[in-house]
Amino acid sequence: MKSNVLRIGLFAVSIAPLLSLCGCGKTQADIAAEAPPPASVIPGYDVSAVAVEHPEQFPVVAATAYETTHEMVVTGTVNPDIARTVPVISLASGRVVAIHARLGDTVKKGQVLLTIRSDDMSGAFSDYRKAIADEILARAQLERTKDLFEHGAMSQNDFQVAEDTENKAKVDVETTSEHLRLLGGNLDHPVGTVDIVAPVSGVVTDQEVTNAAGVQSLGTSPFTISDLSYVWIVCDVYENDLGDVAVGDTAEIRLNAYPGQTLTGTISNIGAILDPAIRTAKVRVEVRNPGRMRVGMFATATFHGKTKVVHTSVPATAVLRVHDRDWVYVPAPDKKFCRVAIISGESLPNNMQEVRSGLQPGQQVVTNALALQNTVEQ
Image (cartoon, rainbow, N blue to C red; front, side):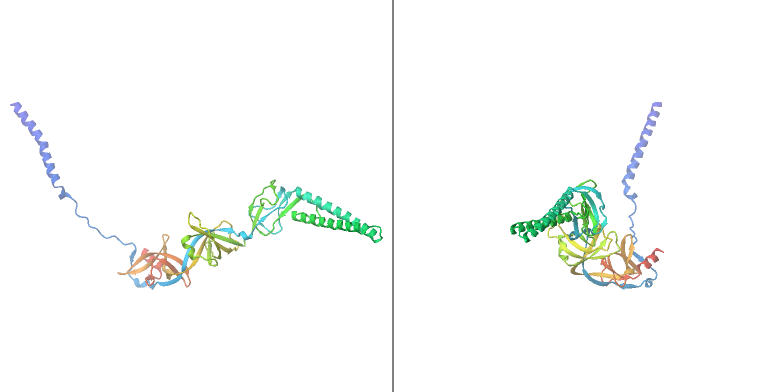
């Protein structure tokens, strides 16, 4: 009897999990009924369009066409004019004993740049003084021979020989004195040092000498002086753009150091050889230096081509600068205005602004974009 009760109990315990499994299987069969309802898409807010209650408070104007020439902007650097660059040479060899100028200094013509101790100068003074002594002796012999010749005590041949010796002595004096002047010596002050002076006025753009260094006659120039009253802007122009530049055309120059100032230069040369790596030619623009341009400065040159192009112009107040981009407001239906991105160009006369892309002539724009923007933000 007890064993039958135990069997019935075990059967009841084992049948309970089976019933729960059957229930779970039935739930999995109806999983589609538990799916979420379809999503309802709500259109997002267009941030480029703004609505105002009184759009008539913001007058609009039609953009106009603006005709101009094709512009090309290239970068370049300031270089000295080679024709105005003069090397400082020394005709005497020797050792440097003093330097009176340095790289970057502004010097005047005739200013002493360095002093060297030269044996060439000592030898030149020796030759000059010997030539003076020989000339004095030759002149005295000529005077004596002439006196004897006039009294018949000397032959004409001896007189002619003495006269020839005197003439040669004068030539030696002139030659040795000129040699001293070329070396930089002073005939009245026989010294063994030479002062090298600046041949022109300008800026020292190169220095190849130091204290106690040696200077070779007609060797490496110890200094190079450049006249920076006129400088070159050397630019790289791509092969496809060479048709827009020509010798004699003008260019607008803007320096990175002085962005608010514009200079005018003239194209003086277009390189005959292209760079094989980047396919560019060197274009040289000659510019008068107002005193602020320094060698090595970065510059931007704007060339105006001969091809006419049409751009759009709008009032300067219609352009809004936001997040480093330019925008204009265009009227839209339902009392709205759409904000349109543009690329602006140069400032034009009569408070107008050039628009190079993003807007077509004839389109309506709000004349005062800043006032509309302030109204929207409020």
